[in-house]
Length: 236
Image 1 (tube, one colour):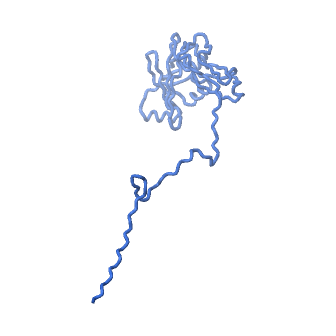
Image 2 (spheres, one colour; image 1 turned 45 degrees about the vertical axis):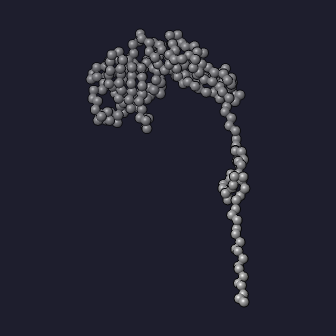
Image 3 (cartoon, helix red, strand yellow; image 1 turned 90 degrees about the vertical axis):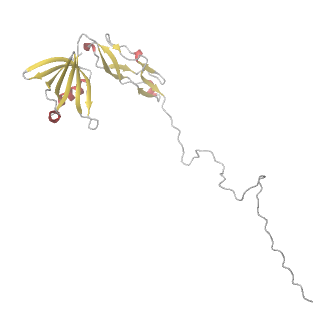
């Protein structure tokens, strides 16, 4: 695996004012740990972004650490990048110092090649995984893992166990996980405007009139007619 040279400088002051000043000057605070060392550093923001764009995350780095007039070399790998959640600017970087005779676990990006026949037939290709975790010696870290999808029909899939990894590279995750598959497209039924979507409901009885008796017949009050007037008797 290619090893890149990258310069850094020792970070001695840890105050917020110093951090702010260095960031404004195009520097990123970083830390190098591993092999019983923790070294605080500053790296150049522009150079670091160019390295990421050119070589990606999984690259061996010959880190040159400048302190006064002396320079120390460390073989390292990029471990973590912290970004501002709003601006996405890089605000901190972690490097890990390697022991070239000891295996490490790294995440390798998956590179898909080929065109699945199932896609030509109307299927949809799903990239289920984008990277694989492997374990190997630092010098054997692959740049990428290539996955060929040119044999996938609708309903077919590729699992991790179907891959052939390079010699010295061992899988560090479940082997039965699916990497990619081709599935039928989801068809949504079209609902025409104005179409009835529910069954016709029975009319609801809003209210009743007069009180019903036990037999269900309506009860009414009997109207009383006025009594006839008495006739006056004539005197003899």
